[in-house]
Length: 397
Image (cartoon, rainbow, N blue to C red):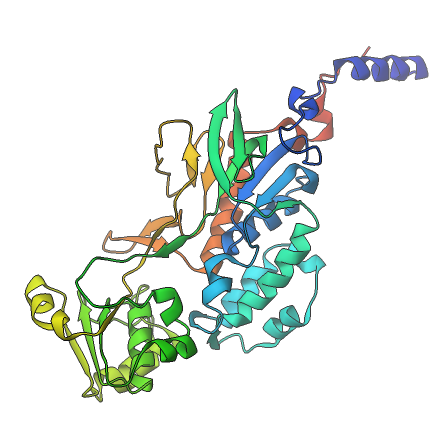
């Protein structure tokens, strides 16, 4: 190609390049906010951390990513569950970290300690919480991080209009809700409820329970059995456990083969098998959770703990009708350019008996995010993410 032709081509490119109008929009309430927001991530729990890291892996400019959380402390996990025994092995946490290239740019004593763990060991959650806190600190320096809460989301002109609790407003091409969940409670009659978030810390629980008390424990899954273990070790006078389903184990306790993906694992499984079921402690009563049994036994209970699962945190107001939208559990899509991930919006699969199962482990979040984020980009492409040559209509002169 002749030099003059190349020159004419460059002139043509300079006049045919289209710059998105949103690049020049000024934000209401903030002069220093990034003017062109391609992705807004709401929540800084494990799923939110994974999304931010993977977006950076995929080449999204950190200046166009806004990350919103009131604390940036790994959500409920970092606030309450630091000393809780996990039901995953260290290898799952190590793999979580290793599957994001951006995470590898940073090193800290907590990260190195995690990598030194026996990969087959079940460990307390601090083993992964501390590294994630360090990674969060690093990621906040690569994106626009806001210590705020979202109060409103409004979709208009193919963009989300975001309002924060300090009345700051801006527009974003895409929004990801990694907003987390909180413990589910019921309204059974009892003198006093001990919040599960507090009960999951054994030292805190010891301050909330007297030895001569009778405690009602509602639930029969991993968390409920952990509560039984704690209360037993605190020598509580009597624990009445109201459950709906019998105890199951992830591994066959005799042969060590996986049997039930929803079953007990780790130290909780070992305690349930060797102490709860084989020794049957006299201060623990396990009964079916029926109205008749509740009417008979709840009146003698001093306090109650609900360990019956989690429910989604309140979602920011969408548009103007307070509608809480559902999501596609295989893609994370809530509505155009609005996505959900994490424990509030988990991937759902079916087992061999066609029973639905939510994948809510940390490694589940990372694996799911790696699969669906590229699909989000394909479904709702943004011009800044296209290859350089695709930004132009090139005609050879």
